[in-house]
Length: 357
Ligand SMILES: *Cc1c(COP(=O)(O)O)cnc(C)c1O
Image (cartoon, rainbow, N blue to C red):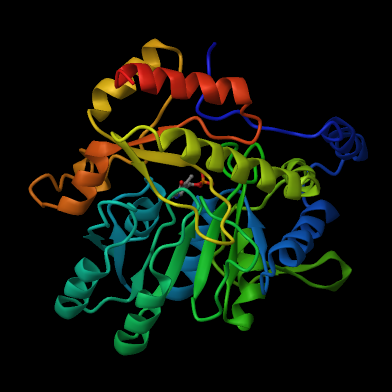
């Protein structure tokens, strides 16, 4: 048995939906994207939604809107994917890394508070790990006190009611290995209603369409539109959403029950409302367990190697003890809605064998 970390899932209708788009000749720029935006708004109760080519491009648009003429100071938790720091750095902003909680892997409020006391922070980008929510209440409180923007990296998170109007903006990913998959895609939500149209224009070269086919460039935009092909994948994903959610929750519960017998392994309990996007464990002898699973054809991953340990960022001398502790013990196990009972039992049996249980 060979089990991948992730296997995308689609319904039987996908081919027919795709064929319709292909045959129509409208591969991009048609009604499909708008339809999916409306579907996302009604499904998850978003105030608005602007689909883009990726979470990365959605984040670029958000920072373009807030900080186009200034160099901002932006706080990024070090346990994240490349995007969260790459985008502000490319735009010339000043980045301060922040430590994370050693158990959840998400922003550590005490470390963030220390940064606030010593710097003039314009924006913080809390990151969801595995679909779990960071300590949003604590950050909202600090926002009232210090006055900075909160832009949420929700590439791994989406659930009913996940957006909070006290937050400034959030960006989402529809990359194949996320909760909602397309070949490539993402999107954003923004609280200030006056920015919704601006974001839409910035997504496609800052162009505003006028009458009689004329157009005007209003902003320095980007090429960040979603194609109709990607939109159709999303439509298909949303059509089987309740099944997708119940499968994910059931697999998370099964993992939880089966792993409870193994004292060397710990993991986060499932919060109400959320849809898990990864199954992450803290494991004793993590490296050896990872190799053992690989030898037995079970693919795993680590979310993430902290950014400050990567050679580009070259922050090796800085110490982020929470992130380093998290990085040394966590392991992401195969987790996707089409994971079978047999596959799950096999993974557990390999882990038990490793710990001689
Ligand atoms: C996947 C991911 C991204 C990037 O998403 P794209 O849609 O590929 O740009 C950003 N941040 C986090 C935390 C992610 O997991």
